[in-house]
Image (cartoon, rainbow, N blue to C red; front, side, top):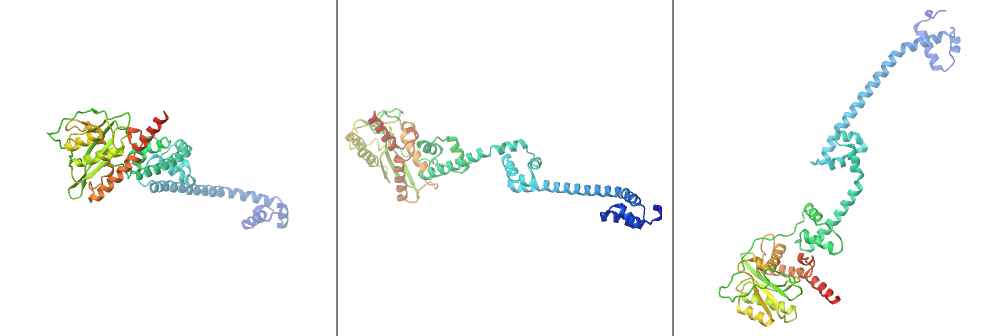
Length: 390
């Protein structure tokens, strides 16, 4: 019986039976009463008919999947700039881009992120390789910043980079001053700066001529060889002033004596001198005392006080601050470091307390650049120890 004698439905059912039963085709042919080769022919014919449709369906499915994958890729690439904009927060430095790639590489992959952000993959991996060294540097900077803040606070927020740098060096820790300056800028840590001046030197035309012995050489080989003194003003609210007279040793820059009053009469400077003499034991034969040409230093009362203590007087040129530079420098530091931002103290007691506190700090703790960034008292003590050891 030819195959044309079987209906299309019969042939399709036979093919379906052969495919689904799992039994030999010859047995199925015997059960259907057809030649054993006939179902095989029907199966081959069905496969030929199905192949173009299957190929087309498969191709269509692959095309749909490709389009879906492309859509997913485009969506991911659109998502990267959105996330990056939020991450950068207005920044667009190369480092912040590398940080973004490092944080999102698990979600997007390094290649895609670098392509979208226009970065070099080799540059990113180089940056990633040096991450441990950068982290160590950041930790070291953080530790140094904490130390800078501590030293700055202990100085009454007056120290600049030079003196702050000297603090760890005194403990044997080598610190670069430029690094300290950088960290201070980054964290808005600032020292105090000098403000306006007020005239306190009023020469007496009738005063006795006194020679200039140091001639601007404000150095000494030992304590009690040369002292310097001067007067400065302390502004009080309401346009009032206190006046401060000081006596310092040129050798160590130590403040030996001072006096504060609401006037500039001769006793202001004589009281400061007497205090300095007591600090040095009661008499200081042949020490030079250098000052400007203020009327107080040219007075008979001050000349007598110097004579009783065995002090030789010295004065610089009239109207030349460089001739008393050591004393001028001391007052510049004092004003810069303790004068309030409003440029005056509210009351006289407030001014006295601030000055008194700073003078003690100056002698015992403040780093002085001309004596190796040591405090004056510490410098004298070390010098005495070295002299005894020698």
